[in-house]
Image (cartoon, rainbow, N blue to C red; front, side, top):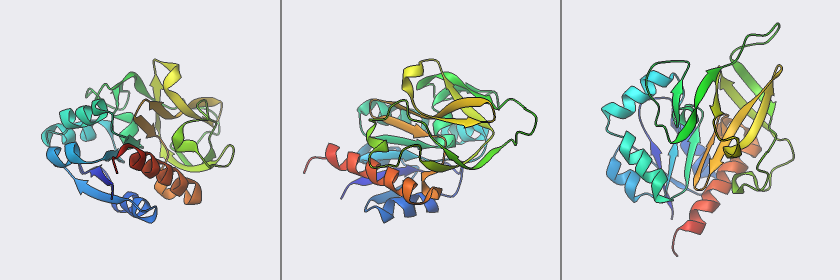
Length: 211
């Protein structure tokens, strides 16, 4: 069975993510051990909350380099919500440097008349990368569940794998580059569509693991 390391750095409830993975036949292992992250077949970086505490917690647990090493190794890597944002260089939410794996900044939604911030609830995705393995067997323009006030703004627009509109603002909802994938929304809260995404990720992991 493929083992997916779910990184624990005290930023959110990991139970729902792990339950989602278990529902699609994976073996999630909640851990803050660099050795287990290195040995795992894939890594999932979840997270809810604020940018600065996330980076401070990763640093205090000596997890920054192990995460970067896991991404560089080529093993499947999935970031969720705050786990997407901290892959970037910096955030308007705080002063801490991010992981800097993806060039760009995390920005706050601009205020607009009648626009609710945070962007919370169900919204539809558009796919600049429709052939991404994570999107296989999904309906067109699928609905997924969001909770966020900040969004990622990558320098390289080619890494954008999903977009979403909130008011007049069309922003990045997911990125993908080689083995690295990360989403702003919550697959584990996105009903059958989200479970299909997690199943796609698990299938990708199994393809990479020698029989």
